[in-house]
Length: 234
Image (tube, rainbow, N blue to C red):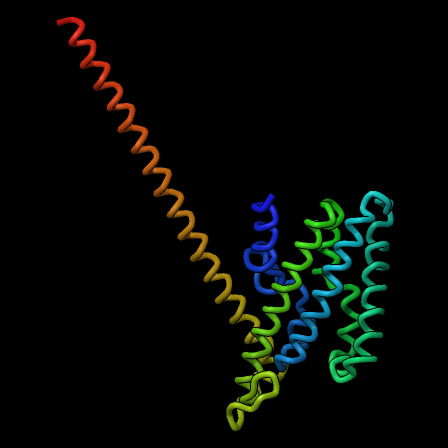
C-alpha cells in the first residue's frame, strides 16, 4: 500500500511532472512566471482545484454517466474555480488582479481535466487525493522555480525582495518565458534520465551478482555430491 502511494507521489512530483515532463498547463506556466509571487499564487490555486476536483470526481465516479462524464468534470472544476475566485477577490485582491483571465481558464486546464479522466475516475478517493496533491505540488514547484529564475535574472529580485540593482529585461518578457521554460525542461529531463540510467545499472549489477551467487551455489552442491559419490564408490 505504501509503495502504491509512494509511486503516485513520485510520478506527480518527478517522473511525470506535469510541467517539465508532460508539458501540461503551458499557458499559465508561461504567463504567470514573470515573478515568483504570481507563480506561487497560480500554483497554489491549481493545487487547490486539482486536489478537490480529484476527490469529488473519485467519490462520484460510479454515479456520473459515462456519456456525460467530461461535462460533469467541467461543472465540478468550474464550481471550485468560482469559489476560488470569490475567495481571492475578497481576501487577496492583488493576486486576483494579477492572475486576470488565467484564473477562470483553470476550468479548462488540460492537467486538471487529464487527471480527472485518467486517474480520479478510475481510482479511490485517497489515491485520487494523493495524485492531486502530488501533481499540484509538482506544478507549483515548477512554476515557482521558473518564477524565481525569471524574476532574478530579469529584475534582480526574488519574491519582490531586491537583491541586485537591475537585470536583463528580456527574461521578464514572453520571449524570455519560452527560453527559460525550454532550458528548465531540458535540464529536468537530463537529470531524470541520468537517475533512471543509474537505477538500471544498479539493478543489472544486482541481478548479475545474484546469478553469480546462484552459479557458485550450484557448483558447490555439484562438487559436494561428486565427493560423496566418490567416497561411496571407494
